[in-house]
Length: 349
Image (cartoon, rainbow, N blue to C red; front, side, top):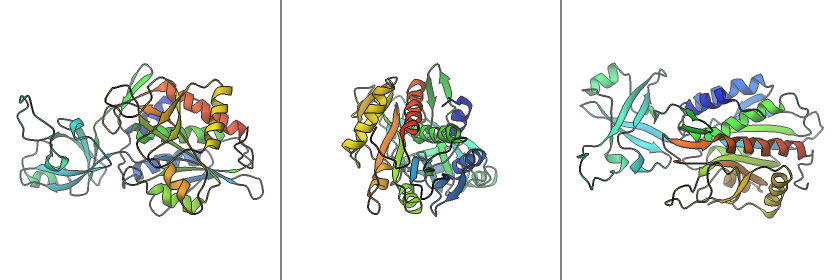
């Protein structure tokens, strides 16, 4: 698998909060179709791309990553032209004050505003208020100006105003959770384009993970897979305040559990053998947040799920940092998974 930095940057910068992921799925559909996949959607909006096998009664292998990023939505416009807003997904209040954001109108245009709150910035004990007490300031003077000149209205989406910057092997960006996973899905589409596979390959860009792991639930009913790999990011432990474990630059992770899913001994053993045999850099990891693995493993009679991914700093902010070496080690793991899996999708190697 190759590192496509241009495409990685593009997908990181697409705007798509929970419940408004169509910009992301439109981008994915073009790449999937170019690589020969059939594209469908479930009723919530998750994109489902399938490459069918020539094998009779082929089993279904599914790779999932969620399309949505944390962000905001306009809930009200004050008479003096300030925006009230709510969050989609968990965002720490302390990371918000004086941050720039992009507010999109229904025509796809965006305007930059600043998250603010009327406090004395020089006060030594000043603390971030609740999001409900904050405003977004575009410099407008009235509600009429917001509605006429900016064409903004209640329900419009808001994302962090964050250009993707490559500092050597480190990337500073927004939406790494989980556009990094989405980028890896596209890498998989590239890698398998000209391969004859002994199983149906299904790539799912799921919706609304950040607000309740919703899209994975509907997608798994539509696909009914035999084996699932989920790709997601998690917070690193580069800072003492973090409760999670793991560090940037130490490779892909072997996730033993998250808040909603415990990896089986069979799946951990399967991954460990691949990682060690192919000298892939990795770190053991225990997550305190939930992922789409929960939905795929529990719907109907349950499905075997294996979790893949890498670590990031400053998760759920406009200044997320991740390491390209970790990304490439995850690519190596995924490539070797394809090289090993047989038509019965056995985890024995």
